Image 1 (tube, rainbow, N blue to C red):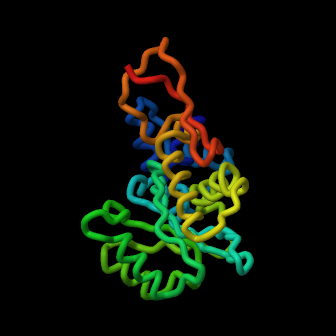
Image 2 (cartoon, rainbow, N blue to C red):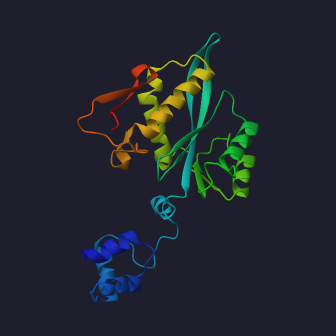
Image 3 (cartoon, rainbow, N blue to C red):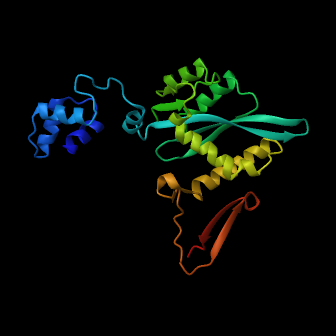
Length: 250
């Protein structure tokens, strides 16, 4: 029966008896041996060989809304002395896709990261106030002191295996978006110029950009009442590099 296989596929830790009980709740009285045969024919592990560890997808589903991810991306800034590489630290809430740029530094070190930990967990407006887990890679800039400071504030660091960017897909997608839509078309001329460019992109990202992963909706829709017959207005950022079209409010 396809239903038995479907129940086991979602609840891989269940044994035959529990699957039988779940099917009984749906009006299907099936014996344990029949369930065992169905699972074996479907190529699924029998009850004695159950998953002992939670899969990554199950972890994300179980803690959705309490998980944020952190990462760096680099930007070359053109200065009078030549190109200088800046490191941009950001955090993204996986459930809402809300993003905050937390810092831009040429040489981020342990002291700088400790300050970032304080900012992230600030008791008034820290980004991680409602989060329990923070996903990050194994970059050595995420020091022991950084992890300890997060732990002291009730946030568990989830360090990803090496060379596994797919496990931090939301952060990687944000990096791809900001590069393709903005940074690949702008040459920052100073650290302050870079920060201004990033501020403009983040404003566009949160209020003017439709997100395919969220049913193509805006993260923060305007509350204005618009008339269909009202003229269309183009809001430009960065000289027209980023555009948003809307109708004049009633």
